[in-house]
Image (cartoon, rainbow, N blue to C red; front, side, top):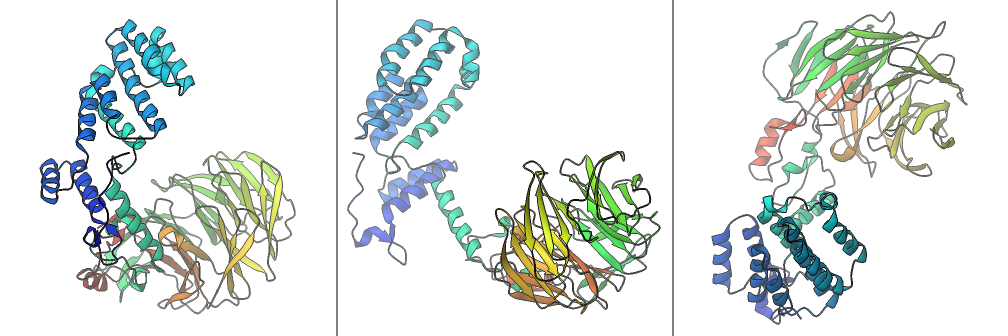
Length: 561
């Protein structure tokens, strides 16, 4: 057997709960020091503690492997005290295999053949691999396929890699796995993150100094103040209290959506325009392009998968495709004698689709060639549609109270059936959940991965006359946000349905919300008061908290500040 650990007495256990074995703890720290390159510190800890990282036999074995003393290393292997014959054979196989390839590299073909016949084959394991090795004797190409070409150029690195592979075969009491301490710490942080009910910070904000906990201050409800008014070409971006307000539309703002990379925000309005806003690294937003050309109010926008293009849909009018960088209109999609009421992209970015006023759906290529048109069972003109990232499922409202999911490959259908009229829906970023807004002032969360199932209901927001949209957001989309006719933005915990915050500030109905997918601390809302509000963290409160907490880092445009 491997060197046994000393019997565990009272003094051999550490920690407040007395469950950590002192010997294991010290050995793992020593291993971490060596792995980080702190050779002298690791050696000093071994000497001062009297606890060796490895037995003398293991240390000798490791040195022989790194020096390429293959025959001697196999002899030492049997002195370590391993009783498991399968481990001994597996370790010996890898050692002899390395010897075999280094001999071939030196053109010592007969010696390599001898090693294969008298040392590798007699082990009686992995016969397929033995056959592959035999092919290497007559074919250098086979060595390339097996990843063992040009060993001489990187002999030291390849032997280190061999030692790592051998280490995985040994019991952890004999050789502690690489990066074991890092793995234990990552596990602890992961448990803390999972236990954090309001978790909404990126992984790089987790600290080892204190236990992790997110409060409600990690939910965007304020904005970073610059203390200045920023002039822009078509309107003003100004600070009102702690809320950043974008004013460039001249009528009700109906829709807005952050780009997939979080670097842009697009909005559309009853004023027949759409705007592309740029999100800067400091959290500021500036007007990049004012998109004009629609003859009717702009219902919605849709970002291409690569965020280089944007679709805008006029109300029962046309869909326009824009270049995000130049602001140029690249194409106009129309359906003779009919109006378009929605727009979206297929995941490949080479096809666009739109709902049509005759209750059909039309699919075009980028140049406007109509590829497909279908009606299926749709009895409503409600516009919302979505396509999963794999392009397989098309999701649309087919009746007032029913959403249809159509599998394009298997020609299958799944239905989500509600008791109330559906006004809009939103698909989660992982394509597993659907957020459904209803006419009775409820929002329902449905699982759609297998058979559709209702998971959670969200209540509190107001809706009586207008189309109100909601969204997923925050870290791993832990939260749900929605507009409301009472001029507030509502935020719930996704899993429990608990209302976390209601954010006042707008002076008209809030029609649409969008959470920045790259920044869990940035939320946007569009309102009938002609403005867009950008909600973020209260920087002053955050700085006070960082003085005695785990230092949550403020994020802007998906990057740390």
